Structure formats: structure tokens, C-alpha cells
Image 1 (cartoon, rainbow, N blue to C red):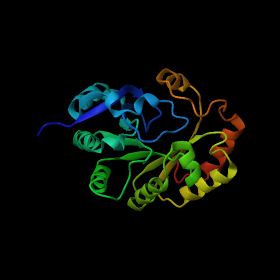
Image 2 (cartoon, helix red, strand yellow):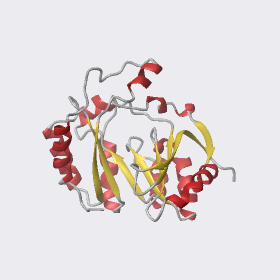
Image 3 (tube, helix red, strand yellow):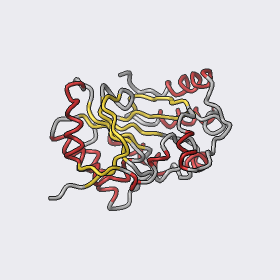
Image 4 (tube, rainbow, N blue to C red):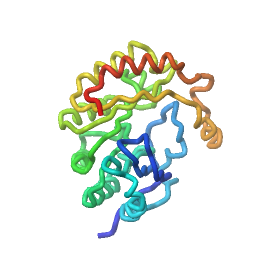
Length: 249
């Protein structure tokens, strides 16, 4: 059977922040969300990526396998990798046959219980060891402003992962004037408390390092003039959301 083609934005050989241990990180292209703080708008267009087969990617990844130790492995990020779910399924199937730890970094935006996606997603979860789930905003209207999309299917996916007891790390980008209020943070903490599978909660301070990419692409930057959160606000968010941690790693 002919291997599926995946479209890749970039590769990172020694990732240390996208899952446990040292990871080979595969950034796929394509994303339907338009997060106002996105630092990789050059990943939005799926067709801008470099084509790879799953076998070719794993061959490249395994050159670094000796560095992974007992905790490392591969992480697939984006863009939004679930937009390439057929390729992702083949990649993770092959990885698990090779005994590789698999992590999926996703916003959850493509998730739906409609077919054929849902059956593919359920099968993908059989080959996924850990999910890094980005919850951009707990408030529905605030989420639409920040990302252009609803969060209802994302929260639905989070609840389903909890029911499945699939290990999840929650990531939350803290953005002043958007989601950095105590009300929103407490609501997010309450939601995380309702889940039984969250191993870690990470607060990622909004930054402006990707603004030049918006300029290069000729796209107006929607958070113009908004500065990164102060250390005090980051600490505040960490204190509120840390209470939602389930287990210490």
C-alpha cells in the first residue's frame, strides 16, 4: 500500500519543551484557527509544507533515538496536526510498532464526533501516549474573538479524553486584554478540576517574537500595542491554575 504524504513545516531534533524528555518534534502545516497571538502564521497554509512519508520522517527521527532516554520520543505539533489525521494515524501506528513514545500537540479545533473523523480520532488515540492540549480561552465568546472559532468542540474533546483517562498536559497562553483576568483563570481552573487525566498545567506567557512573520506575510497584527504579561500576572495565573494539577511528574 502506498504511504500517505504529510506536509511538514519544520523539524526540531532536540525538543525539550514539547513533552517528556528529549523529543524529535515534527511541525505539520495547516491550521483553521486564526489566533491573534499566533507566532507561526506561516504554518496556516497546509500546501506550504514539505511533503514527507511517515517512514521517511521516522527514519530521520530515529537518528536521534539514542538521546531520547526512557522518557523521550516524537511529538507532532503544528499548525494543527489533526487536520492531517490520516497521515498522523499512519505515522503514530508505525512509531508504536517501533516502540516510540508518541505525543500529540493540538488545539483540538478539528475535533468533531461526526464521521469519518471521529472513528479515525478514536483509532489515533490508541497510538497516542500523551496529548498537549492548548486551551486558548475558557469563555466561548472570548475564544471566538481570540481565535475566530468556537471552543465547544475543544472542551468536548477534553472531557472525552478524561473519560478515556488519556494523559493530558494543558497549555494556556496568557494574553493581556484577552484571557488574563482572574475570572477567566478561575473558570479554566474549575474546568481542569473536572477532568481526571491532567498531569500538568503550563502557563505560556504571550510574546511578540512572531510579529515579524505577520509583517512578512502582509497580515495586519491584531494585538498591536499589547505587551506581554508582567511576571506578576504570570505568577498569578500559575498559582490559580497550578491548583488544578492532578499529579506531580
